[in-house]
Image (cartoon, helix red, strand yellow):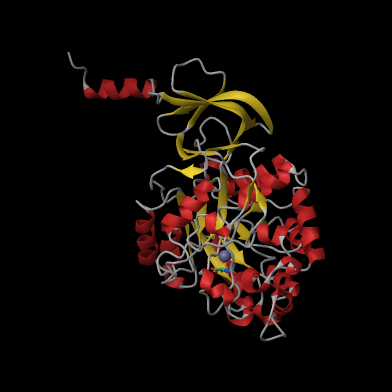
Length: 451
Ligand code: NCD
Ligand code: ZN
């Protein structure tokens, strides 16, 4: 006899059906702050079910001498989709490059064409993610149109505020209007990332000819002044500063308990290492002394997030005179591999890199990954620290075809598992475009400022 529906519903509640184990990944994995030999059971929904010894029968893959790490989150990329230039990037090419670089989630910036300042434009971009993106994408929106802010807060993944002109941003709000805007945004409960440079401090030379003159034109004090305009932001606001460039920024932001990111180019390149317009970027590369101090702060674990600010420009525009060349460098595919190579050479330790590339940015976006733990998504990479690659722009996967790290040593992931399914195998992309549009899930964190 068929039981009445009410009873059936009750008994289901009493005994929730657990998804079955779909696969097991075995090897030395980064768990609880160290590498330990384990078996990771992954369920049919792509979540980590258990970590330890697994007794059930499911397809098992042993990674041998390689190590299993959580995949990374890149809080800051520009994939130029829609609006182009199409020969530089798209959501399809950019997310495949990210997957190959061990990145499982990106935050995609709103300075596309048209800029993402309203819900209709945001939804159009979200529609382009579905069916095209290889990994998950969190979409930033710009809060510059006052009447759109409340609706955007319900649909976007985060806000991005530019305090200075940069690629695709012609004008910025005056600095004295910023505290009021921050108070308003704090009520909307969406993370806010700020491009912090004060154009009021930009100066001579007006037509910079190289990276050192670009640094003089958009100098460190312009960053510090912009940071001051954020000083009294409400604690409720999840505030994050993009691409800081100096140890002085690090000290100031730590004092104020504000989240921030540093890029591989500001950590590893300086005006001295910059050949011509290849490394024109906002904010500019700094002196070698500033770079070394920033790197030391990163090594000490004082930089919470690593982000690439992947900003691909067409290769042809690199040969323009410096003052006419666009600002921005690609980097989503090389961010983690460059840092893993520094781990191998002993310049930084693995916990520091994993915290800044995987754990902390995922928590910032309120996403259950970046850690190998039950309940987290099985976005995992397999890394063989003996397998080194010399980076070549033309062999990387961004459509722009160049890198400011030409010839640098990197450790690219051998495998990448997305929701437990292999999408990179032997360094080749073998996945399908099933990336999702994600929004912060603060069940995993809390509003306010995380550590
Ligand atoms: C970025 C771009 O090209 O979109 N350029 C850059 O120099 N970083 C914009 C930005 O983040 O400033
Ligand atoms: Zn950027």
